[in-house]
Length: 439
Ligand code: PMP
Image 1 (tube, helix red, strand yellow):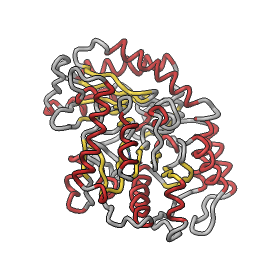
Image 2: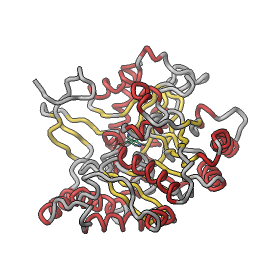
Image 3: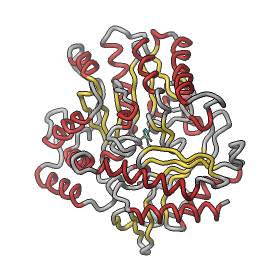
Image 4: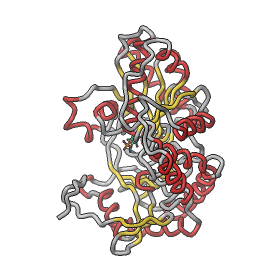
């Protein structure tokens, strides 16, 4: 009997024993094409020799030094490298062990910034419906996925939630993309005014939504208007790039494509690329200086922050994403993946939308293309697709959810950037076959 506590307690999972490029292999020798990079994690595939070497080199020198006493060369190098490529104004890097930790740090930093600047009455966060920002209580409390929150609601801080920027479902007929972007962003201003601007700390959103609605980018102009509104009411803009950051959308940071610089950014997943658990919270010098020149102490911390081996792995990953050309490859192969998806599913009667950027692509599955009606949730399309694809040797990331009852089933694709043309055809072929079997 296994003593592992799996998430789905009744599941009997195969045992992964090896990773080779974009494939995972189990103990029976079955190969799975990792079409979602786990959950947008494995950007460099599963057997990158350079990252492995960087980890070996580091562990031979220094495995751990507590950041309460000492910093380390790989942590310093990683922070320098991230800032060199970060959006304008982002100057400081706080290293953690994953995405939820990065979001917790961001929320606490934002609140502490308000205290240090004499705005103690600011306690509220605004996020968006159907969003996911992590599973720890603070991150879950700001997230807008009601199903995930429900059992823990009485334990959490609460945030308010505006509609996401979701063109396929929420743009009105006759409205241009720009008009919709403006209207969608202006919902933030309405909510700030409803709460009272002097009570709000910050607004938290993903530039390209990942885990709750496969790869939904904001429309043109949306984030720029969001930035203006945050500036007008002096609230902090926190962009959660845990899933969409680190080259995934074809630029190192997703918000580069929206030409917007936030006050705080969270990253994880692709930062460690699956080689080490690591995340980071990045912020401006304005925020850092308020604390440095105020209390002088960020009232937060975990034992494993700035871990030297994790930092060395992430430093090697970011080097490959930038100098090594892997982010440019994500942009190029992402276009190729999009072409293949359009060719296969562009006229499919049950695919309503094909969307995303770079190596971050989503398909929305509908019962009826014209009315956009989703399948009856009782059919469990997303769950069955996940199972069927896995059976066929494809790991993809189907999900289902709801925004005011409108959102049905989707599938997220986020393969490693090293994927080849032939492997893209294999991925799309397996997905198509699995979908036919399920529908
Ligand atoms: N934010 C976003 C946008 C995410 O997609 C996730 C994970 N899916 C998290 C935060 C939480 O990250 P982790 O699972 O590493 O704690």
